[in-house]
Each structure stands twice: as structure tokens, then as C-alpha cells.
Length: 394
Ligand code: LLP
Image 1 (cartoon, rainbow, N blue to C red):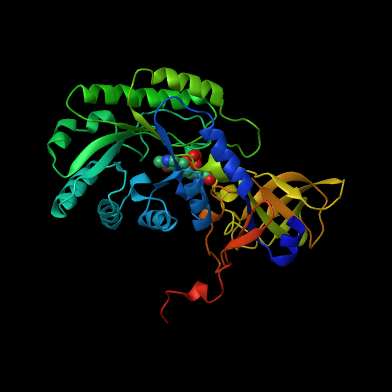
Image 2: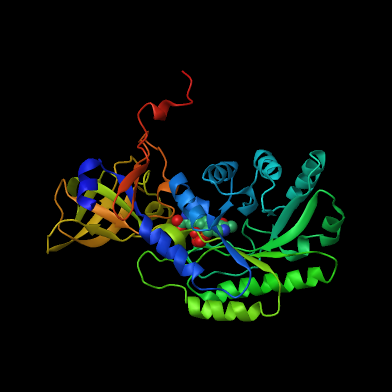
């Protein structure tokens, strides 16, 4: 089927395997965690409607960070009561939309948000469930650029800044959730457990003082690495987590993004040119950082494969056609020798691949294809040139 797809569509395109996504959801579900819980897919990892709908059918809710992600989740069939809204910079528009949809929880990360949600909810005759995202000051031991739980960063609120008594008096909000998310690509389960522990401690304390915290949102971050097989030890993670929650009655929310979709996706691209520059051989592909930003943004070399039979390994950089020096997809990697016209396949790019793509240099955003057991279908058509002008006024 892959060859057929390759023949049918021009590159670059993203190709996802439905089976892999379902296997990942099963893996989590089949842990059979012994406490009340639900998985909410972090939509930012891959907001394609077909993927959101697939996850809905697997029993997942959604975790969103913008009105757009909320809209897409609802459009994909996810019930508002299964949506969590996070994010350190929610606009009034975001908040009003989330409030009127009466979603499961708006997790606030700024003190001013609480007053706005309270007042707007009262003006609409509503009471809105909120959560507070804690900044636990934990270093998740992941890439510096994707760590989010340290003091000094923009995420969450530190416990000592929150006037919990005042929130109790507000009639337009119900504080029912505490949340934490310390970063992405985490493989040290102890870091996660540490952050969960802090949340449980605070929730227990608040519930002794007339609060009714029923949900603990433990965020996402389950690691899928770019280059190693390092992974979270789910056995240990589960053991320690079940211990922490023994005798407690909290409903636990998890927000995995990358773990669910990363391994399902490939980016297929074609070699346009090969040039020697100084001592370096540079492959120039029809994919660039507009289609796949992570290597340029986080300075990582993503795993890439060739589709030819060449045995001879050569040293290459891989770059796109964007007029920027940072437009590299890989640096100094060994690959079987490639020729102009060959295909390259970036693997494990189902998360934060297409979702971080842009139209920079006025490049159409790529096509996306979802492959099932016996069939495949386009789940996002390539932007047309007209699409690039949409919304612009001459
Ligand atoms: N919950 C919250 C509040 C988040 O901020 C995130 C991700 C998640 C859940 C899902 O995290 P995951 O399970 O996917 O690790 N663009 C970066 C990753 C940024 C993640 C941002 N927040 C990358 O490509 O590595």
C-alpha cells in the first residue's frame, strides 16, 4: 500500500498509521489503573479532525489550549464535558468560548483569569469549573526548551501566590481541579511522580478547609525520544502512582499528546538536489522547516530513513529550500548514499510535526494521509495557491 500512496501523492506529505495510534491508546487503557481516571489527548500534538475523531472513538477526551483547538475538538465529536482548557495566555475570546461551552475544567495559570471567569460566568448565570495549574518547581530532566515546571518559567502559579479562601467565596467559579504539567519527552517517572505528589498534598490540605477538589490533572509528557528507545517505565510509574493514590478518591486526568501519535507518523519527502559545500554534502529536500520545524527549533536530529537499496554510508546534512540558514532537518548524519529523486522518510513525526508546520515562504501546508488496515484516505488536502491568499485583501 505504501508504494501506491507514494505513486499517488506528490511530496512532501505526512502519513499516519491508524493501527499505531490505536495500539498506543490500548497500551494506556490496558494498564487498568486502579483509580478513577480519563485520558484527554493533548490536541496540540496533532489537531487533525480525523485523528481527534479517532481518539474520541477510543474513549479519549481532549486537552486544548485555544479557542481553535476547542472548536476542532467539538467538531470532531468530543463532548464539552470531556474537554480541559490549559494555557498560560488565554484571551478573553478563549475564556468566553470555554465558559459558555461549560467544559470540564478551565485550568488557570494567571490569577487575573479567576476574576474574569467568575465575573463573566455570573453575567451569564453560569458557574464554571476551574482548575489551578501549579508550578511545582521541578526540573523534568528533558530538553531545556520543552521543560515547563520550573520556577522562573511562565507556566502555572506557585502555591503561595494563591488566595484559596477568596476563591471559595466566588459564586461564578467552582475550584474542582488542581493541575500540573512539567514538560514533554519525560522518561524519568520519578519526576512525574514527584509532581503528582505535590498536587495530592495540596488537594488534601484544601479539602480539609472546605474546598471540594475532586479532580487532579497530572498533565502529559510521557516520553517518546527522537533517537533512543528510552521510554517511561510504565510498570514502576503505575506502581508508585497507585501507591500515592491509595485510599484517595480523586478522579485523575492525564493529557498525553506525543505518546499517542508520535510513532504513527512519517513525513515523506523527495531529494531535490545534492550539493557539496566545503567539506559538507548537503541534501536539499522538498520538505523544509515550514513542514517540520522541530529540528530547527530544538536543534535535534530526527530519525530519517532512505527508501533505496544503497549500502554505502555517507555523511550528510539535510536542508530544506527556505531562505534561512536555520532551515535544516538534520545535521551530520550517516545515511545510505542517496541520489536526486530519491525519497526520504522522517519517522516518529506524528506529534508536533504537521501541527507546528507553517506556510512560511508561502509554501502550501502539506497533505496528510491516514492509512488503515486495507485502505487509506486523505485527511488534509494540500493548501492550494489560492488558500495562501485566503483572508488577504489587496
Ligand atoms: N498538557 C499540557 C498542559 C501541555 O502543555 C502539553 C504539551 C501536554 C499536556 C502534552 O504533552 P506531551 O504528552 O505531548 O509531551 N513542541 C514540543 C512539545 C511541546 C509540548 C507543549 N505542551 C516538541 O515538539 O517537542
